[in-house]
Structures are given as C-alpha cells and as structure tokens.
Length: 282
Ligand SMILES: [Zn+2]
Ligand SMILES: [Zn+2]
Image (cartoon, rainbow, N blue to C red; front, top):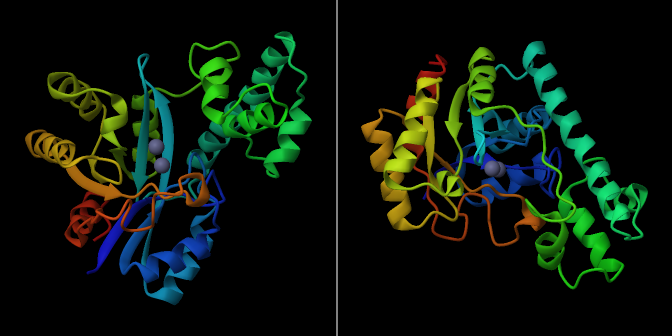
C-alpha cells in the first residue's frame, strides 16, 4: 500500500513537528516519496533529506507560497526547485517580513478598540518567532475577551472584521514566476479553497496556466470524491499535471495524518515521474 505525499508542513513554518519526526510518520504510513512544503520557507529541507536517506524515502524539495489575485488567496506549491537559489531565498525572506509586519498591526487595532493586549504577550504565548493569528486568538481567549478561537475570528480577526489587517501578498503570476525561475514546477494547492467551481474554476486555472502554472493538487485530505473528479477532469482538459498531498500540520490540524489525510487519501506513486520530468530532473 505504498503512496506519496507532496504537501507537508513542519516546525519551520506552522506545523508542530520537526522534519525528522514528519519523516518517521511517513515511513510508518508507507510513504515512498514526499515533499516538505513549508509556507514561504525552505530551511526544513536539509533535515528532511537527511531523515529521508535514513528511512529510504525520496524527499522532493518544495515550498508553498501564499498569493492574492484581487479576489481570493491562492496557494502555489513549488516542486523540485533549486531551493538554495539566492534570488529565490531573497524573495521568500521578503514574504516572511511582510507576514511579521502584519501581527503587530493587528495588536495595535485591538488596543485601539480598548482591549488590553500586547505583542509581547502574544509572542510569549506562541513560544516561537512565527506568530500567527491563531496565537492572537488564544490570547483573547485567555483574557476572556472572546469565548473561543472561532469567536475571536468572527469578531476581530477574520477578513473584514474589527482588527483585520490584510497581508501584502504577491500575485499568483509572481509566485508562479519565482518558482519557475528557481527551476521548480508551480502547482495550484487545494483548489477547493478557491471557492470556484465549473466555468469559474476553469477560467481561473486557465489564467494561471497562461502565466506558467504546471499542475493542480487534485488529491487532498478534504477534497470530496466529486471535487477530486472535477479537478482531475480539469487537469486533463487543460493538460496540467496532477499532484496530491495531505497538508499535514501536526497538532494545528489534528485530524490530518501524514500520507492518508483523514484516512481516505492515497496519492498514487505514478504521479511523481511526470512531475520530475516537467522539472527536467530525469
Ligand atoms: Zn495552503
Ligand atoms: Zn499547506
């Protein structure tokens, strides 16, 4: 029952486990090849590759870049990229700075609304430099300003709410171009998140293909069977590669397991060769 998993997060971004632990779980799940696709960062790759050599798992260098097309946030995965490329590393560093600028601004807005919270408190609670909105939600809960994380997002943190601050994101065309310039294959992550279906989705993906998109993440932990079939059909029609992965995050998404997602995920090994060929790696 061997399988592959081309979408995994580690402690290098917002996952809860270090790369070596993710590889150990992959070995248990009979995963033969995987890609570490941390958000806007590639520093987990060397540790993953070393553990991969130990477990006999093929580790494909990857990344996941958040972009915005003016309407919705689109995540672009990159595979087989020259992750040590200095231009590419510089671009990722800029993206991370923009992410870090956002959270102190959210705190400022909350303070302006009269809530007694500081950025230092959020950072202590997070225990890492990689502070996110879930950590701010935790602090609001701790201080009894909200009743749950959902309440925090509904009242303050979600798009359009009282303390929402938009991130400065690249366009999908930029994310795609950066991945291609680093020798990688750009793939649209979890198309269900685009909230587009039918003709709308087809138009969106066609536009992305015109800017260099190479594939679609057809197999995904939370895609339903009809969604998977729809994306598979679209990939065929537009002559795009098919990929798949769990989007494992560890404790931050406790219902998703490495390799099998919610239990029913199985990304076929045969998808790897065309991806590798597209990157010119064979
Ligand atoms: Zn994503
Ligand atoms: Zn992801």
